[in-house]
Image 1 (cartoon, rainbow over the protein chains, first blue to last red):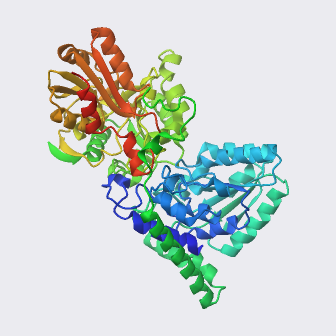
Image 2 (image 1 turned 180 degrees about the vertical axis):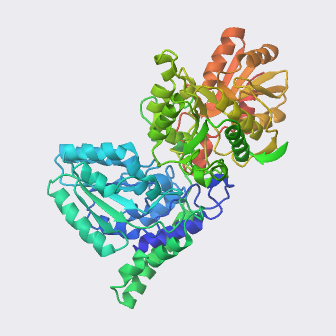
Image 3 (image 1 turned 90 degrees about the vertical axis):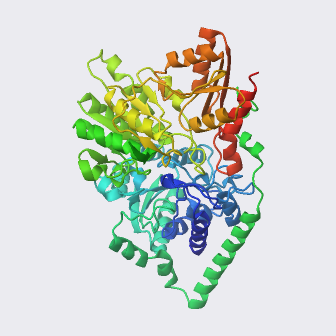
Length: 318
Length: 314
């Protein structure tokens, strides 16, 4: 969690002045483009991914740095990717919104809401067909449950009894609009249960609670019982993107949420010396990652023409 | 006349249409907050949540519901956020909106405007940077508009809302802050190009954000370049393009969309068929748009690239 927080803070700092969201001018910041931060949501990534091995697979959202780190990706290669460098995990092609590290089973963040759900379901289907002893963790946000792929993906996973844990990381905001105002019925878990997918709702800012619930559900998934659903309630500390001041939110709501910081809660069970050590290690790691990323080489422009397709490769104009 | 941004110009046009016609409503994600580019700023305050409708992240139902609203008598203006997200609503657009009038024997019409901002948006990578206008131009039943200036984003949005047909309205993500003088009462019909610069040696047809680069390249060229801002891709203004090309005897079409099967091919082929003159195309290479700047730059159509293409005419 400390590593995720440190990474998000460093990414935010490196993006200042450089984000072109809301039509603002793009400066020469190290991190370009829309940056979706998971600050405040760290307990969900950490509490779920602690139960995953390298062979397990994961799909994520546009807000995917935390999941990627928790799945075991290299912080330095991730920061290089955000800096657009050739040494990034995607070679600079994807950036924050498409960050992926297949070497640790992280099949990609996604720029399209809910798009990861059918992909996770298909990956789980492949694991089942190949009789592999692994599962898929599928992270998505509360906004995603109002898109069709949510229904279609859960239904598919259930009828095929696929090894997938669906994790609705509910930060209560769909971009700039309150999810509550846009969502009918009892919400994510009720919808999952209506399709027959069992699950639990958990305080997503309580690391131990997430850990316990994810542990139970993942054990069932690994036991061949089919898909399970974890609805983790958390809060998005920052705006939709880093340049969004999120002034549309109620000040008291935000203040209350900031007091309920999942990292502070997790630290409550630790000795001061341990807390200091964990924080220092995370800060040191991210400092090294930023230094390495800033010094890393840019992709050669010829890389723009590679990894597209083999058939017809080289015919860029016609 | 007033100086305003491309975003403000469209907002003014929509407000004007909503004041004039209670049938006009607008719906999409975050429109009540003014939209992510502030192109809906103040509209919910003026017209209320019944006519400026915040939606869930449900692209297929945003567009599908707009088809239903249109068939039931309203004129919805829907926000797709970026054209890349409109791909989540292709059935509703292509199989439903574009076909309903014809399939049902003319019993109903679908007067909706689908705003789907396109083009490269710095640092936004492959899923937020596409130019897909040629897809829509290929579909019978759809109108395709790509405004390149604040004035046109005011006038053409008004024309689109009034057209009575489903319109794919492709604003450019990097033009929102572009400033210009706007006459809110100026009417521009759909299907009418604008000669943005007169010339006698080469006709340079373009649209949307590439207009700016085309004008810069025209200034820098030793040739006398006539620049045509097509503005509407379907129906496109054959008369203006053919008249200019008949005069200059050379045609270059430049657009940010991938060159292969881009709309430039349609224009170039038409001009070659009609006039038998030299035609050239300049579009993006057939690559996804990369995140890193050196990769993103490969996909951009700059004035330097247009200059190079113009230099090949001799």
